[in-house]
Image 1 (cartoon, each protein chain N blue to C red):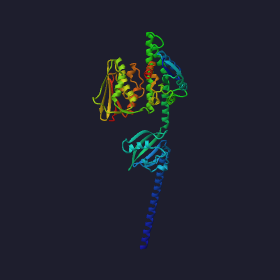
Image 2 (image 1 turned 180 degrees about the vertical axis):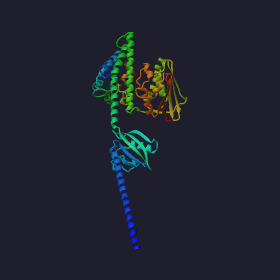
Image 3 (image 1 turned 90 degrees about the vertical axis):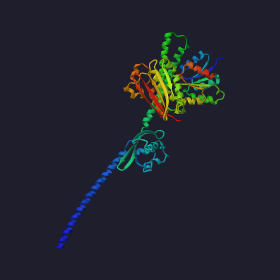
Image 4 (image 1 turned 90 degrees about the horizontal axis):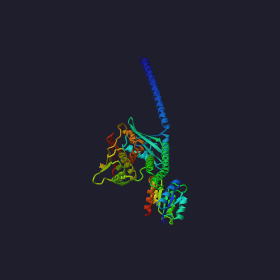
Length: 387
Length: 122
């Protein structure tokens, strides 16, 4: 009996072992399958990265380079195996100056920038990249995805376009000068007497030509802004001096329309501001010209200057026609003109406010306005003070 | 004796207009169509003042200024640039090379140009 008992027990054990073996085999098979799946997923991801048309860069929380796409090697002028696993802030700068890139990433590190951030940077003479940084979290792991989009070609086309406009504008000035000089010499009596009617017509023609010259100047300013070299020489100065100069230059126009220009400012000097004089004159001139142009006869224009925190605020209020509510969001765009002012037969290129906004922003300032149709407008801008 | 003004300008019509205006107000106008002829006439005609365009065929206006500045026999003759360039870079470059003033053609009338000449001539 004990013998047969032992035998049965042995059979049971054998049966058990067989089951365990089967189970193991099943598990092994599942693991193998899962592994294959994981590899396949990884390959897929790698294929996506390898074939991505933008440069891709994955950074760990401590700034180590974890993954790069092949395009990044070209952008950074370093091979994948040279940079993988390295701290992006400690890469060799021998082959390429990576400063513009690391500056942006430093801001990310210091949490100065929001979760998604986009900026255009220049790496080297001909390479322009639009960089997008976004943060991600997968499980416990945090990091950033950096996308480098090559915009060099767009930049080149843009540059050619602005160059073209700039050259054409210069070329246009020559025949316009000839027209100006001829008309002026006739009007000044250099080639004999003219009668009143002739004078009247020629005077109007002269004014048209002057508008054309002004339009070309506006176009030149815009293209220069777009070429990004508009702020030529900033220096420390009092903004009061510039305002005074612009106001006195516009006195004649104001007198013709019997508009009073009043200026208000604190008794003590305002803090110094860092400005490019020539450009700031254009910015303020545009605002004052608009006020004078769109304010009816005997109206009023008030310019005030004040210090507020670390800024100097310029404010110009007029009793003019105002800007229609539904168009207020577009007033700083290129070639914009209000529907109400087009009907007034006033001349304008629609480039003034666009230029002014760009000039103010190049000075690290802001521009804004309040306006009510039929009552008038107030434009403000701020520039940071330096003293 | 009337003062001699040398106009170095490649556009025929502009050159003649300005020449006429200058004669009308009592100057003697000498005309040159390009930088080379300009330099020649500075030496030969010994003008009292020069009106210089910048974009010229061959030697451009900046090069004329450079040569004018280097040559002590002519460098004392004042030069006023009269050009349709007019960006800050151009103006600074011109003044650095010794020009007395920089006038953008489209922004000045012939009379205003004459006034500038008179100011420089004293």
